[in-house]
Image 1 (cartoon, rainbow, N blue to C red):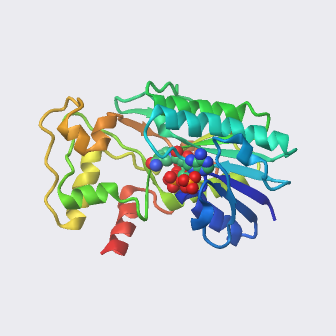
Image 2: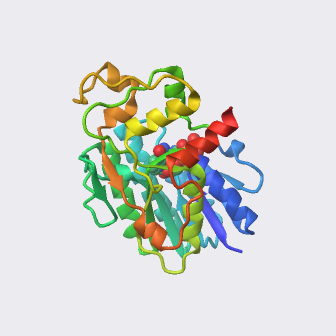
Length: 293
Ligand SMILES: NC(=O)c1ccc[n+]([C@@H]2O[C@H](COP(=O)([O-])OP(=O)(O)OC[C@H]3O[C@@H](n4cnc5c(N)ncnc54)[C@H](OP(=O)(O)O)[C@@H]3O)[C@@H](O)[C@H]2O)c1
């Protein structure tokens, strides 16, 4: 039985924690408001941005998984959660005399600046221009520099139960298919996120970095069209122009605003022995649509 701390224990962290607990491990879920954690996770009320609250970490931790997410899309929040929070937690682990055998950090494919539909993998430059990708990239580095064995996992867009923004936008008629060259999107189901993290906790000699996306970096227009077909609603209209400048269309459709078009390879993750429960959007969204019907 291992002793595992999940720091910033939200949707992915809780799903992981329940699986780890079911496998016989002792799991602590750290967050500011832990009252909503389900039985099986031991609640730990603390604020990663406030070192003084991190003195009561459980002793003898074998593994720590950092899954905190910024609540707002702001530089202040990203710096607080992905840089200061990581730094504070690492310092607290040292202060409390811990020797974790493995640290995991939930990173993001937003660390890549590539946006012309090119393939990227773990060896591609990760030189995001925006504050979000840059902060997350710094968080990865802090873990790698900690002196403890650390693995960063770069997730694509997470969807799953309760995370149905794209489905809702098609159903409501507010989605817009991007015009111009294919806008490739990368995603992973929430349950597969948790399964990837569990897999990497178990792996005997992991690499320090994995991209975690499903097998199908499909163009956004294709995904929207497929969803419309499944929902029996009209295909979302095509944007009037390919230039993705800020404006009404991009405000209504955040995927356009990001302007990111890249295809992330999951070859390293698959070579490590991981198999997806939802290998593509059809399987993942299909399961959600079945539940929501
Ligand atoms: N959303 C995506 O598509 C996406 C894509 C790539 C990577 N990721 C990453 O995947 C990870 C898991 O995401 P998720 O969807 O599970 O996030 P989530 O459900 O929003 O959970 C994040 C948790 O972090 C906690 N938290 C935030 N600030 C904190 C602080 N200062 N101190 C302690 N806890 C704090 C929050 O709980 P309290 O409010 O109670 O503190 C929340 O429950 C995150 O690192 C995220 O950045 C997400």
